[in-house]
Amino acid sequence: MNWYEKLNKYFPVEEMKSKEHMEALLKEKSDIYYKDESDKHVLMYAEFDSFIFIDYVYVSNAARGQGLGHKLIEKMKAKNKPIILEVEPVDYDETDSEKRLRFYQREGFKHAQSIGYTRRSLATNEVNQMEILYWSPEDASEEEIYEQMKRMYTEVHTYRDEEFYGKAYQHVDEVLQMDENRGIDDILDELDKSKNS
Image (cartoon, rainbow, N blue to C red; front, side, top):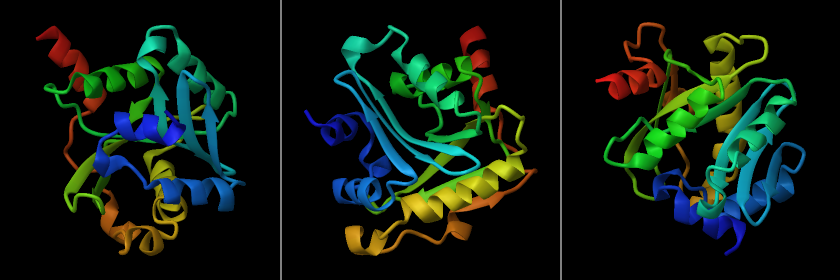
């Protein structure tokens, strides 16, 4: 299986970019978009001057529980910039979503509770609610994370979108909102509550 097939098998269709889109990013945005892979993992990320966005992390079943995910995150943390990623809210019927959140919680990530992130999938036409997690060496504010997320969405997610998907993704201002009174619970705290109940 090549790197794209591994990602495509693991991630829900509404979260996947097309292979053409990702290959174009690797080739045409090679100054910011990178692939780190071995037979046991695939890590796709964008590194900007002031932050890193993790697009996809895949660790093979055979390598799970061996600390490989931790090593990959440590490699990113060593760059000493805020790290941002998107996660789907926990679905207790789908154990992988809870495992993923617990992993990022152990790695010291925080939930950006004031950032709303809702986008329509070009693959399924469904509206997906995502949450933003971040890790920061200098304790970045959620406003800084929001601005970085907007930049990433514009430069990575929507790169040549009409060409690859036949239509454009929504404008960044429709997809990302900053609202300090959003009233959503910290999804990482909620994990602990569910464990203790």
